[in-house]
Length: 119
Image (tube, rainbow, N blue to C red):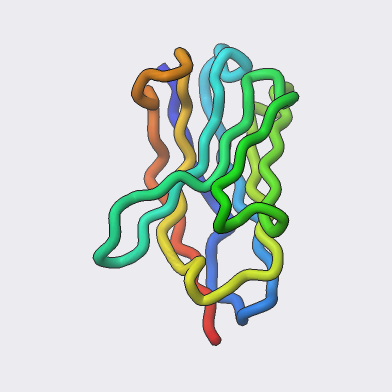
């Protein structure tokens, strides 16, 4: 069992930065690939970024590539999403999720943290 708690969301002006954190409980955190997703009002949830269990491989959605950076520290059971050059279209609830087996559904989800970017 893994419990995920996101933090770091808030209100920021366009062009600003935020750093989201996702703290995980459980001793098996290092076994999971970790993903970040977001859901804007009236829209489907979409993939933002993913990091491999070891942290060596990262994948990004085209919409955030070059602006967002995902990282993790397995000793701290934490994954981060550094978001720079934020745009109003980045406004959404951001979720972190843990995936044990590639290609399968994510196993655990956090409760989400709101990010609002004003123009």
